[in-house]
Image 1 (cartoon, rainbow, N blue to C red):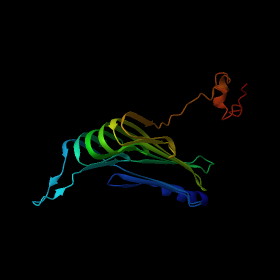
Image 2 (image 1 turned 90 degrees about the vertical axis):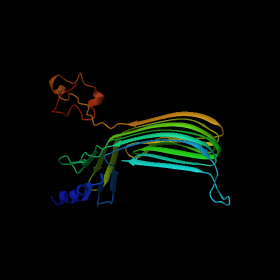
Image 3 (image 1 turned 90 degrees about the horizontal axis):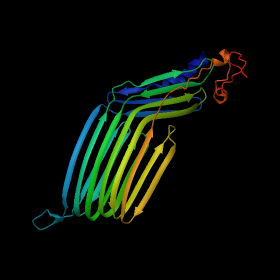
Image 4 (image 1 turned 45 degrees about the vertical axis):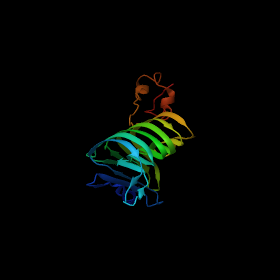
Length: 299
C-alpha cells in the first residue's frame, strides 16, 4: 500500500493539468526516483481573423526638410500568427524600386472543449499509462504575391504546424516575383506517457495535422527552400534544404500529413477453442501463443 501511494505521488499527481482563462494548459509527469520528467504546454483561443491587403507603388527618396535633406527609401513588413503551435511568419525588407503585393489571411481556432486525461495500470503490473486528449482545432489559410524590381529585396516566410515546418528565403534580389499559398490544419492532439515507479519509459505526442505549401517564383539572388517533418517522439523523419544562387524560376509544392488513430484490429481469438486454428494466421497469434489460450489443442 505504501508503495502504491508513493507511485501515485511521483507520477500521477504531477500530471495534473492547469487551465487558465486564456485557453492554455500544461501537463507534466515527473518521476522522483530517477528524476526523469516530461511536460507540454499548449495555448490557443476561440477566434477568427480575416485580413486582406494590396500594396503598389514606388519605393523612392523623399525630402523631409526645406534644406533638402532626403530620407533613404525603404519598405519593411512583417507578420506573426500563432494559435496552438500553428504558425505563420513573414518578413520583407526592400530598398529603392518598384514594389507590389497582395495578401489574404484567414485564421479560425476553437478552444472550448475540455482537455481529458486518463490513468491506467493493469493489475499486477507497475506500468502506468497516462493519456492526454486535446480537441482544439485550428485552420489557417494564407496566400501572398510579391513583385519587385529595384536595388535589393529580402523576403522570407515560414509556416509551422506542431513541429512540422516549411518555408523559403529570397535574399539579395534585384528582381523578385513570387506567389505562395499555404494551408495548415490541426484537428486534435493526443499524448501518451508510459512510466513505472523507476522511470518514464516512453512519451508519444500525436497531433493530427496537415500542412500544404505551394510556391512559384522568379528570383535573381539567393533562394533557400526548406522543410522538415517530425514523428510522435519529436525525432526528425523528413528534411529538405535547397539553395539556388543566380537567376531561377522555381515551382514547389510540399504536403505533409500526420494522422493519429486508436483503432484495434479485433480477431476472433476464441475460434481455436471452437473449430481449431485453421482460419487464423499463425503470424498474428504467435505473440500470445495459441497453445496456452484456454489449453486449446491447436494443430
